[in-house]
Length: 367
Ligand SMILES: Cc1cc2nc3c(=O)[nH]c(=O)nc-3n(C[C@H](O)[C@H](O)[C@H](O)COP(=O)(O)OP(=O)(O)OC[C@H]3O[C@@H](n4cnc5c(N)ncnc54)[C@H](O)[C@@H]3O)c2cc1C
Image (cartoon, rainbow, N blue to C red; front, side, top):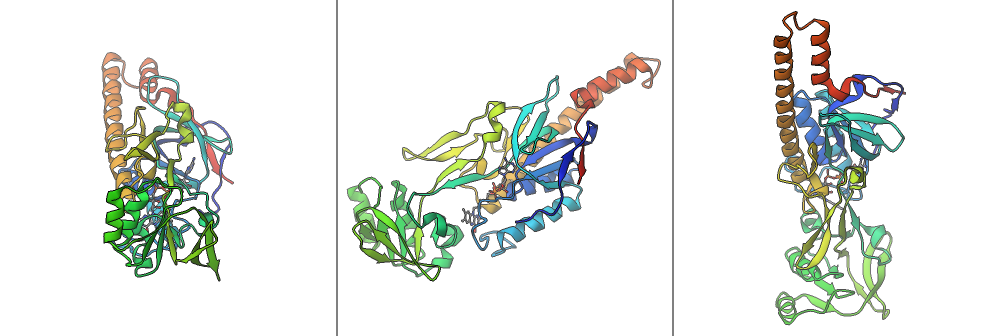
């Protein structure tokens, strides 16, 4: 995926690199938030590493109005829409963020290349990493015929021989779920815990074959998955394999803000990690919001975009409250200096109250 030839480079300090909101991550959540904020006449910078989670997939499904669109195309449309309202989208990796000094909420956002920008607020939409089972062939086929999400891929593998590679108890649930799309589902017990009597009965009732023993690898012929090879050497013919990745929030950039991803457990097993937040994406650190997969491991493209919108609205309301407070402070300062708001002491006071630490920023030019 390309973001264009734009290169951000810091040369000197000025106010121009201070944004109302710096959005880290330009996937569906980040771009949706940036669109909403740009339309709210907020200055927005999106810094994007260009590695959206669904990049290996050929198409985006269940995105109403854009069903089946290639992931890169959807994001390219989103970037154009953001830029159409004055938002900036630049390529880059954010290495970290830390609070600015002074009374106002604000953040120094450091890019991996050593450059920095300032944001009054920070929105993190960095998504998650799918940590895949360590079985030969799984990484290579990921997003093509090694799958995890029935809503993303179920229709495409309907009526085909599907294997479920169980590494956690949820393998049974996945097998029962994919049975909706195909009558030929095999559950490979691999490293999952033994089945309960109830699970054995459920699987038998839905005609799901259960294969004990560890899986040694996937069989591929002419760039297509053809089977699952057990460590015994037996090969079971399959055209698609379902796995349960560990979902790990991409949130290392938040370490300087003392924010750590928290584990999410389902049925006593760790499903992954996420940054905890309220429904508007507000985190434990004032001024830092999150949206999309970094906060919600279940979020899809559409719901990530919706979460971005919700976070943007909350951030705009928060900034509005701060702007109002500053305006009131400026008004009072004017009253307290009858010589007029343009007198030296008055201007200095207003400047201090309104701009605070943001009187100096970092400048960017395009190389
Ligand atoms: C194979 C596969 C297929 C899928 N298919 C579908 C589907 O058909 N329909 C559907 O609804 N969902 C699908 N999904 C789920 C979908 O990918 C996610 O729900 C969605 O991408 C989440 O959006 P997001 O904005 O939270 O994160 P992402 O789309 O992952 O975007 C995060 C962005 O942040 C950037 N980033 C990360 N860290 C940094 C950093 N430090 N600095 C700067 N940028 C950073 C990344 O490079 C990336 O561009 C699929 C997932 C997979 C794995």
